[in-house]
Length: 60
Image (cartoon, rainbow, N blue to C red; front, side, top):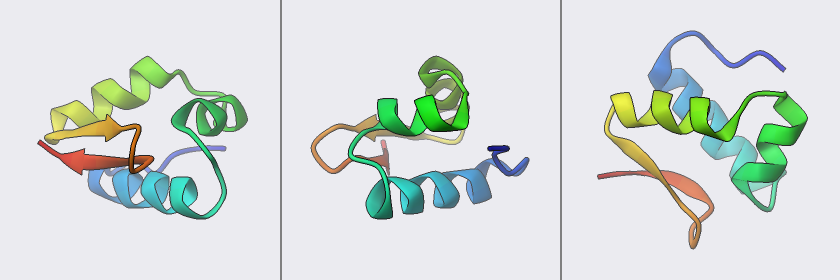
């Protein structure tokens, strides 16, 4: 699965997938064949980090 090129659209896409389809970021990464580190680094660039408790990326 290809993530959207725009970081903010990717954020929305990932959070929607996490909310509706995946129990964790690791499960999402396994399906999309992208590394957790790459996704987290990309989200950190726009000021978001993964929160395990809410299973979503949140603003820091």
